[in-house]
Image (cartoon, rainbow, N blue to C red; front, side, top):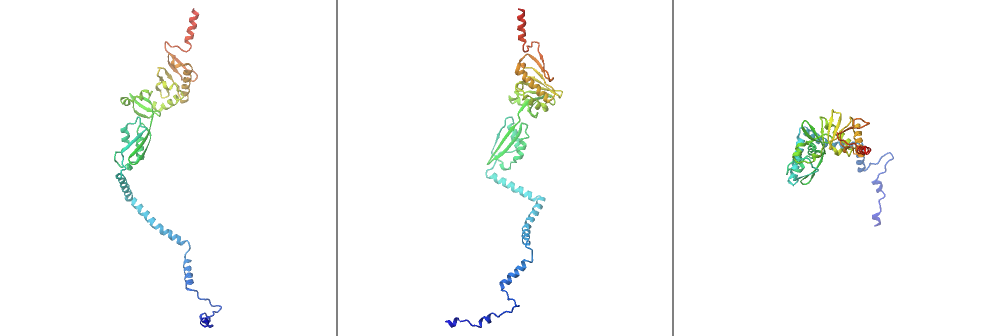
Length: 320
C-alpha cells in the first residue's frame, strides 16, 4: 500500500512546468469572463441604467396621457366618464338608493311647495343623482331663506335645514304693503299673508317712504338701545330722505334729528325722560328732539304736565 501511495517525483514537474519570471500565468476561465463583464459595464456611466429604466416607465404614462388628452379634446373621454357615472347611479338606484322622504327643519314662513319647486326632485329618483350644491343654491334664492344646508341620509332621505329671515316691518309704498326684514329686503306681500291667516304681521310696525327700506336698519339699530320705546313703535316715516318721524302706539309723534349718531342720542334722551318722568304717558301730542340741547313738547288742550296737579292744589289753597 505504501508503494501505491508514493508520488512520482517527476510528476509535479510534468504537470506544472516552471514559469519564467517575465511570463504571466493564464487566468482561469471564470476570472476571464468576470473581467470581460467588468469592462462591458464600465463602457457606460453608472447613472445610465437608472435613467433608461425611468424612461421606459414614462413611455406608457406619456402615451396614456396623450391618448386621454386627445380623447378629451374630441369629447370621447368626457362622454365615457359621464356614461360610466350614469350607469353607476342607475345601479345604485336598483339597489334601493332612491329618494323616499324629504325632512325639512327650520321652515316657518317658507311655503312647502316653494321648497319642493326649488329642489326640483321627485320621489323615486336615484338619490345619488341629486346635485346638492345646486339644490342648496336654489333654496337660498327663496325670499324667506337666508341660508340652507342639505345632506343625503342613505338609503333614501334628504335632510334640509333652513335658516329664515325675520320680518321686522311692513313697507307701505304706492298702495302696496310689503313685509321686509331688518336689512330692508322684501320678503312677502303683507296682504297675502293676512289672507292666509298669518297673525305675525299684525305686530310689525309700518315704514313709509320711497327709500325707507334702505334706511330701516339704522332705525332698528338705534331702537335697540331704547328698549322701552321700541315696543311702542307703531309706524315710522322717512322724511325728505333725511330723517325719521316716529308714531307711537299711544298717538305721540316723535320727531328725530338727521344723522345716525344724532338719532341714537335723541332716542336715548327720550328713553331717559320716559323712565324718569313717564313723559310718554302724559297727555301730549308730539315731542321734537331735533335740537340736541333740548326737547320741545307739544301738548293737547287738556294736557297735564308733571307738577301740574301740585301747582293746582297750591293755588286752590291760597284762595281758601
